[in-house]
Image (cartoon, rainbow, N blue to C red):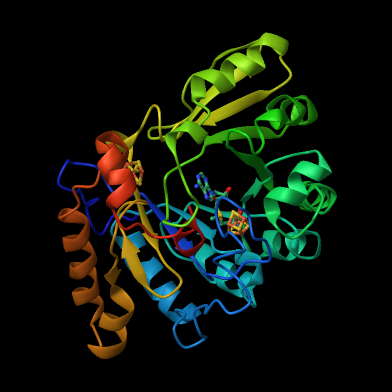
Length: 341
Ligand code: SAM
Ligand code: SF4
Ligand code: SF4
């Protein structure tokens, strides 16, 4: 961390450590649980160039956040690889004093062409989303009829480029619970960590219902019956995935249980949308429009720092701990494709 400023704390004493930057709201997939085709159709209006934060604006914000204690940056979207010249942005982010780690979340379809360039720019790790290994299941999920092989090629390219890789699989009952074991079998022993994510009640359009959630406990039991696992210790403070290692030594898996076993107490993340709104929680209804402040008010760097400090200081979010039937159904929530997960 940078020594100029003390780490800032929110209302509950949680420090700010991670910045997630969504660089685009468009995507080349239409995953049924994230951007259902019926809503994100041909006539859906995405953000215009002018509405997107420019790279200069993103870098200015990232610099300020780094001064306030942010050490890790994750680039996401939509599909972040669809943002032109993403490697230029990564190169500049990698040069910011205090930033120790830059990662990217992607569906990996465009990674075959870009992995080397991104690594050279300073990217260290990728989280690749893959919800099924069997083509028929995956084609139905991504809404574009794409089989798993373009993603597997993207994974291969990331490996060759020397990027760290984790695979993220959202598990939804009836959609891909049949794929828990095939995915585990496929990645076991390949030196790649597969992480299962409980289906979350983000957004307003994915028809979320608790009965679609397969709990961490059920995921663990399913795997353990065929491929014995045991709990492994946390890697670092605030790690969101619970880790389990295969008893035969062939690697590990993770489970992210934001529904059945939440982790708000150690949540050190702030999220920046592609159009410059800051969200202090994935389940927030509204964001803080920092783009307008920067564009209209010609904020000085000190004033910008104060705005961000005060926003984090006011933070009382702990949605997953407070989740009730009422909040699930009636609260307006931002879309996952807009905020990036
Ligand atoms: N397009 C990129 C990708 O899919 O990796 C980055 C953006 S995507 C919104 C980020 C992550 O959010 C993906 O791993 C996706 O599976 C996950 N996600 C989207 N909707 C979700 C939901 N309702 N519950 C849990 N995870 C979700
Ligand atoms: Fe696109 Fe990622 Fe959402 Fe799928 S999960 S629709 S790849 S943003
Ligand atoms: Fe953080 Fe909000 Fe998720 Fe809790 S619900 S872990 S505060 S993003």
